[in-house]
Every structure is written in structure tokens, then in C-alpha cells.
Image (cartoon, rainbow, N blue to C red; front, top):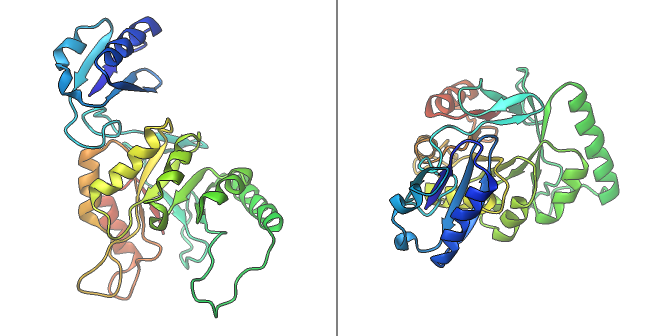
Length: 290
């Protein structure tokens, strides 16, 4: 169950709701927004009648949630979440935000860059960077500062949970969690304790439920700055991954979180970047990596 408190509800009213939840054997999760506080009752909510909670002081409404994800659901919050990073707003009716991949051949101006400094090729015969961790961190910080001087956002892709501190030291504005880490619950829980926007991409084999549950794992631990990322799913008719338009549309209906479409690896001779961008925008993406 999700309990939405009235605007600027006081701590006494919040504490009373929490006490009521605990008395029924459930535990609470509190999310504090600029105006509203949202309280999640975690556990078997069948012991509650929503009208019972709704009559408590300064409660705006109480909603039973039918999905496995709760805090990020549209039932919990009907309005689109907006995340502001360095003066750039992502989500809702804000203009589309564009990031570019350093290897992209596109020269179109963008709002920032996605860096992938921890990538190592899986092919053992390809050259592997030999920079020490200290050298890599120093180079990464210099690169971030260069983009920040140009008022650009810097997203850094993590390849392992041990990369978190290096990315934070490099003053990353967003942490990008690719599909290879979307099932790493330990990492998701650690990201939930940070105060930095997270992009969580679904794996090609993931359902929309898997995708939203991964995001819920982060938000449940306090980090509400989460962006859902779609970077490609399996295509039965081609060797190329395809942009999962259905998943973006469905996620927009089920969750209030912003959505990113990473098309940087999806362009091929049958599907150009312009078409992919149009598809992503029509489906409801708020952010594109090209």
C-alpha cells in the first residue's frame, strides 16, 4: 500500500501513519519529496483497508498497489518524475535530453556524454588498456571537468560495483548501469544509498516487470533519482538488437520515472539513427544516447 500525505504534512502525522503500519506487522518506507511525503507499507497489505488509513490526519490518499513494484508505480504518483541535473531537466514535459557516445560519428550538439572508461574487450586477443587505477581516475576526472566547463552532463558507465568510487571521484552527474549489471542486487542496493541519478538498463531478456523491479530495488533504499534505460532487445528476424518500443510504452504507463533510449549500438544499415530517435520519442522516451 502507498500512503500519500498532504502537502507539507508535519512529522507528527507521518509518525502516526508509521505507527499504524507497524501495529499491523508491516514496515514502512518513507520517500520525502519537495511537497509531498509518500509512505510505502511493505508487507501483506491485505490486513489494511485503504479507507482506514485515509482517515488519519493529513493523509491525502491511500492506494493498494497491485504490482510487485510500488514506489515507482503510477498508482503511487500519477505525475511524471522530473530530475534536474546541472540546470537540465529530464522527464515530464521537459525537452528531449541528448547524450552522445564518444565513439559516435554524429556531430549533432548534445547535452552531455556517456563515458565508458571501464570497458574491457571480451576477446583475449584484442589489446587491453594497461593504465593503472590511479592514472585512469586522473584521466577520467580531467575528461569530466572538460565537459563540465562546456556545461555538459557526464554519465559514466559502471562495469562492476568496485567502479562506483572512481566514478564519484570523477564528478559523474549520472551513473549508467548497463544490462550486464541489471540483475546484480548487491550493486542495486548500494546505488540506492547514493544521492546521484542512476540509469538502469534492462537486459535483452528482461521483461518490463524485471526492468521495473530493478529500479524499485534502488528507489526502495532511498535514491529516488532513477531513469529507466532501454538499450536493445533480441530481434527474432535479425542479428541486430532492436529498440524495444513496446517496453518503453508499457513502462511509461506503469511508472512515473523518466525513460532513456540508448540507440548508440542499435544503428545498422536497415535502421538509421534518425528513425530510431523518432521511434524513441514517439514511444515516450525523455532522453536519448546516440
